[in-house]
Amino acid sequence: MRRPPVGWFTGSLVRATSLTDSARSLTFSVPGWPGNLAGQHVDLRLTASDGYQATRSYSIASVGPDTDVELAVERLPDGEVSPFLVDDLEVGDSVELRGPLGGWFVWRPEHPEPVQLIAGGSGVVPLLAMTRAHTDARSTVPMQLLYSLRTPEDALYRDELQQRSSTTPTTWHYTRTVPPGWTRAAGRLTPDDLRSATLPPERGPLTFVCGPTGFVETVARGLIDLGHQPDSIRTERFGGI
Ligand SMILES: Cc1cc2nc3c(=O)[nH]c(=O)nc-3n(C[C@H](O)[C@H](O)[C@H](O)COP(=O)(O)OP(=O)(O)OC[C@H]3O[C@@H](n4cnc5c(N)ncnc54)[C@H](O)[C@@H]3O)c2cc1C
Image (cartoon, rainbow, N blue to C red; front, side, top):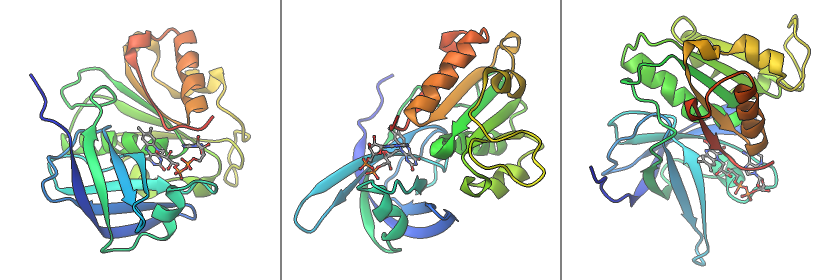
């Protein structure tokens, strides 16, 4: 079936909520938005008064037919667009949004396989949408999240993920600083971490991995080394190294 062409929409910022010191969730009212699946993203375009334009991709945290579209943006200190979105965009301001984009990095409630989600940093955004879709559909398919982040303060949507822990348990992993009393030392995910915190290949999970490019590539390789089939691993790279 042919999909309708993806168009540009005008989104007006209706809500902005601080998630951490360096990240904000931004909800845009987007008249005409066709709704989106869990895992899809948008292109967001800013136009300066002199006509200069900058476009970046952002995953959609919201899911379903609603015309409110929620994004979550983390500030990269030297970035061009993300500091503006996190620090300067005000309620009532407009941006252009093109989407919804992406058909592969998508979880649908009809998928029968158990689901393993693996996030690095802000890569949790499309995976959060998958946990929301799982809840909305009252899915009984097992779904669990492994969330790797630098420090406890960097967690996006911690309260919401904890509230959902009975249906979508989260394993937290810290690479730089751990919370008081944490038994595991800070450090990068090791093959043992991956083995112990993810569904094993024998259960035939569908695995979604999202985050900075280096994180995604390391995790995907680690999963294949554990015996997962490459076509059971879906990846989304946010950029960087
Ligand atoms: C499909 C897709 C979905 C995305 N979803 C999100 C999202 O939900 N939330 C979000 O905050 N970002 C997301 N990104 C990243 C986003 O598109 C921008 O790259 C990011 O906001 C930086 O833009 P900037 O203009 O501030 O930095 P730029 O000026 O474009 O780049 C600054 C430098 O940072 C590097 N860089 C870019 N992204 C990262 C990263 N993630 N980690 C480390 N270094 C990086 C660039 O390679 C460059 O060297 C997504 C990217 C893709 C491709």
